[in-house]
Length: 355
Image (cartoon, rainbow, N blue to C red; front, side):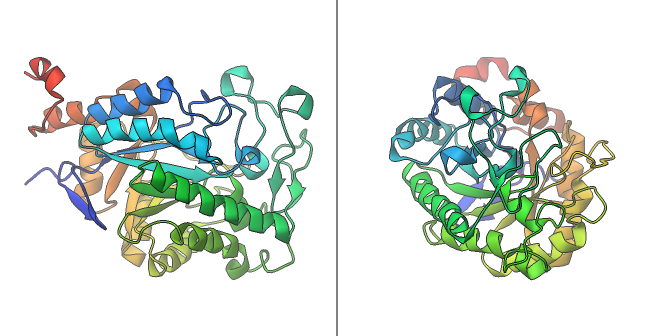
């Protein structure tokens, strides 16, 4: 049987050379939102390492939407130039360049992980986070500011403008970040959304903000280029967002033109109970794909070639996205091909090591 992990897939006008993608992973290495040579090497090395799709880390649509002061951003035109250069290199490696557009909501204004991952006040370079409701992420933190209608419209506009810049920067895939406890996820879940207006309460109201962001992104993103959304399929907490709602949302997103659901989970509340294990999130991707027919991406403790091959071959997902494993091995796609007996092109500069 042919190896499915290295079969191409067509999404809109793009052909992905294999089913291996690099997940967006925060590097906390930016100043004022600008990409730099760290991002060029980080992203570029994974493109030369054989992955079909390289998705740039959660890139904030506004300064206040950053997780930390060291996050990448795309809230001004000046950010475009370096991203263009990075994308040109990715393209030169026969890879596709994607970007994840994000707003951290109540999880914003934090120090970098190696600096304690603590809430920063205005005297230490921080700012006041916003959220659907004034509910803090942790009990010892100041509550975020609940967005009013004007604030909601500003966020939607920020996504729209960032999408326009992403196109100018040469990205070929846009992914909207609606997972991991960040702003869109906060609106989706009843654990963080206590609103009583048209953005809270019922399922239809809680998904409204995400659908409005989607519409704004689609107003700037070409219809012939792929559009992904990352969701947390479950909060892993009683009374929270769940797989049934994820299936229902995914069906609506498919009808509205989204091409692929990047299926993760958790990240919203500290009392989540996650049963970690190899491929622990893959069943969610499989359920959404089976119930709706939309393309899905699988993530979560996927670490070896045969494991990834089985996910594609068994029809659980259409792409496999790698995060920590790709940090350990930027060339994992080339290594997986060798392990599975598939002959794939290597960068000509490295061909002498292929045998």
